[in-house]
Image (cartoon, helix red, strand yellow):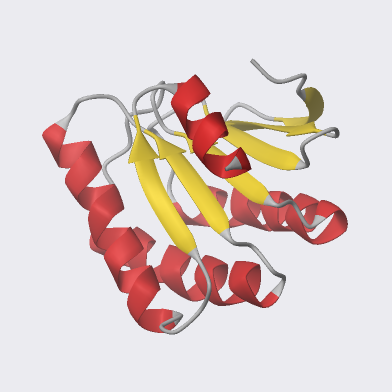
Length: 139
């Protein structure tokens, strides 16, 4: 486990950073979030991303087990993918539990994101184990 330091916490998410590896991690704490609150939370996350320019990021969806509805997927794809790639992100690990519906919604968002940033040097992958995700990010 890395040495994560807390940067932000709300009822929806926690944002942490490991300064040694420059990995930024956000953990979703609830699956009850509307699009307006999600937008607020993602702007908070983006502020930390812009400040620290991490080598890799981990999004932990295991506790929230969110199923991303199409309008949320569309907003996330348009907001996140172009910005993080422009700022130099190379790898994004997403932690999920073994839930088919949640995984399919995340995979659909990732596929849509790839279409937006085609030809970018950027990779994302799903993991059930945090240590495996960290190892992949640092490889």
